[in-house]
Length: 211
Ligand code: 5GP
Image (cartoon, rainbow, N blue to C red; front, side, top):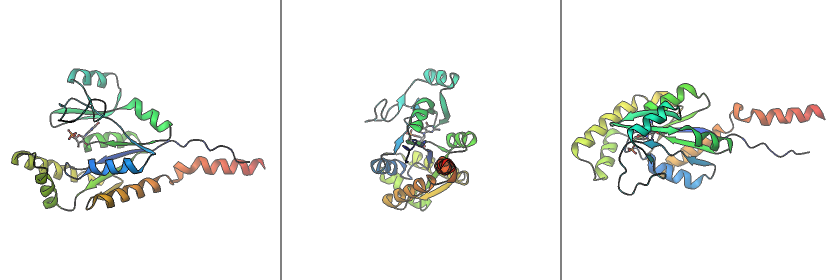
């Protein structure tokens, strides 16, 4: 007789990539396609940009509030980036994973490395760009940044690219829809890893033994 399937635990997925790599657009499209995947909302001490809302884009907190969260151990990881703290609240992630949802963390490389160091079940993806010239073009196209800021972001991008080797996968964003497709392929394949399918195999074996 078929038993109702146990809900499988979701996957924790880290996504990093330089500013201008198109992470935000990729994630938007991915979330619209995958009802099994949610995006973790980070806490930050930086000021909201126009149009950003507390609890939707980030939880905007003071430095003091953020440092309390560090002291209470309520962050899965955190890093200081551009003079501000950014961190991932741990509670909601646990709940989503138990509900079987994949949880996406869109975080920079220092924070990603912290998670890699203590979560062996993590799937990590680095989004890359076709060339530095293309990155520069994308940063200039935004039209919002000063020359100094653009040069600064290019330097940070170079540093981040030197950490790409720590990630399980590197996805080239030459075209957004192709990049989304590549990430979908990774998620679908990762779901079939033996460790994630072990319970299914063991249940079949148990059934076979009790027959
Ligand atoms: P922005 O200020 O442009 O929203 O984000 C700056 C950088 O912080 C981005 O690279 C983004 O991926 C990263 N970031 C956002 N949330 C977190 C977080 O919770 N932890 C870490 N380590 N980085 C984050």
